[in-house]
Length: 224
Image (cartoon, rainbow, N blue to C red; front, side, top):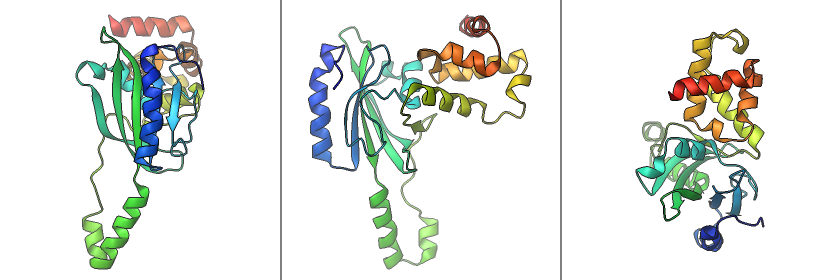
């Protein structure tokens, strides 16, 4: 296990293990250290759900929460959607861990894979109701937030995912975008927290085939 950088998070390592065992194998419990250089996982229980291990980076959803300062308006966010590597839809919740000054130092996350129960639910309805009923009432409504959470194994994969999501709807090739179109993408990337990651400036500059100074200029313009 990695050495933690905040003594405040020490009790949460035990809590992560406890919740993982108490809730059972359908619940992944993960603890992120926000004080470390790479903001990585320092404890995880039932990691088979997302496939992550200690040292994995923050998710795109976590970066979005930090970028939008969601911790200033609440202590946690509950029941938003995530997608595991195996395609299973997860119901995810995150609690903000703050220091005495109110600065977030960690995230305690629970990801519930209810696929087994959805299958049982559908089988039960198929027994007691005709198929038309299943089409009309397909199950629980999805809880959503501005982004669907993904669970990357490393920072390059996370940056690529965020960039792909921001440019998915483009009709123009990246190398043919004008200045305003580039700036619009920079705004989206900034809102999703991409530039909180080490190496993000160089990554985006390479994607746009421009200098890092150009990316810094765009960021300066949108923040002014």
